Image (tube, rainbow, N blue to C red; front, side, top):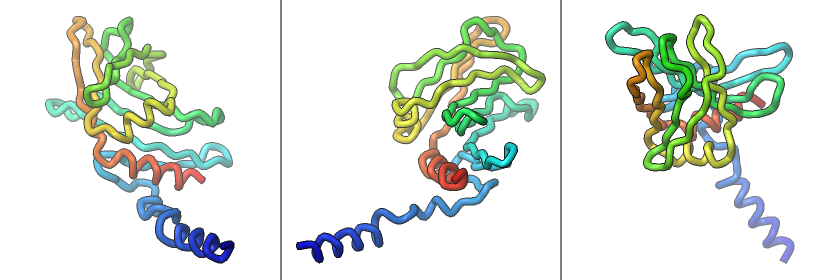
Length: 167
C-alpha cells in the first residue's frame, strides 16, 4: 500500500503540482492586459501587477490599478490612482462583472493623482481571478459619474507570476 501511495504522490508532483508555466515570467512582462513589475525596497524584493488606462484625447493617465504587497506590511492591496480634478467625497466604486459594487474612500491626492488603497481580501481576489471585466466609477469635478472599464484578461496568470517573482 505504501508503494502505491508514493507512486501516486510522485505522479501528482510530476504532472499537476509543479510550478505553473506562467510563473517563469520576468519583471516587465505583459500578461494579457496586465503588466508585472518588480523592484527592490531596501533589501526586499517587491512586485505588483498593474493596468494603466489613458485618456485617448490627451494620452494622459486616466486610471492606474495596481495590486501587490504594501511595503513593510505583508498585506496585499489594490491601489487605484485617478487623475487630478475629481470629486473626492464620494470616493470610488469597484464592480467585477455583475457582482455588487463596493465603495471605497480616496485617501489622498499627490502630484501624480488621487489614490485609494483597498485591502485585497480573499473575496475580492477571488472576484478578480474569476472575473472578465471590472468597472471603476468615480465623479468628475462637476459630480458627473465616470465609469472606466478594466479588463481582467490575464489577471490570474499575471497575479501568480507576480507572487512567484516576489519570492
